[in-house]
Amino acid sequence: MILDLSTLEPKHIYATMIQCIVPRPIAWVLSDNGNQTYNLAPFSYFNGVSSKPPIISISISEKRDGSKKDTWVNIENRDHFIVHLAQSRQAALVSATAASLPFGQSELKANRIAVTDENDWPLPRLQQAAIAMLCRRHQIIEVGETPQALVLGQIEKIYLAEAITQPSDAPAPRIDIAAFNPLARLGGDDYSAIETAFTVKRPAWGQSHRRKVAKGPNA
Image (cartoon, rainbow, N blue to C red):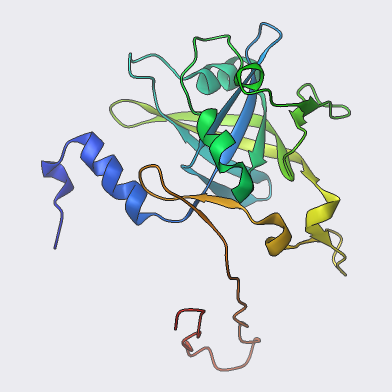
């Protein structure tokens, strides 16, 4: 089957894309409403872009009425935001924060989510989040006919909960993926957890670079 996307409505293209591009990490974004409250919303069009400087990307659509989503407005106006990485046990809470509230009303208050202040940073992070990336707006690019905001954020600091880290010979600790158990987005209302992780060793320089089939958990 070949789908000619030029013949499909945007909503059907979106539904197909989010089922194909799986699993996706979720950016659980806290931003400043500008009225002494904070906005919290999940976005799954999200990934890393570069490491020097450390840049992440988040794609944010407009609201149904054609106005910019609150996260888009907040980052555009106040630069700082925090990207949290949720754990699988937090799926219901992440989904709840996707509900549309009037601008200026806080999902934190509506869902009784606690935050904790972060030293030398203008925004608090979620108290129960195991990973939080403290970001500053690098660039916002409007893409497409709608348009969509491609937000590029530079990570300045990363909070890692001690419960998900392991000692490492490298300057940074190693993340224990089983302890972290990140939440991933699938299509529709579906989510996923990492039930099995396995390692595939890359060949050392000078050795044969022929591809070998990795025997994963379902091979």
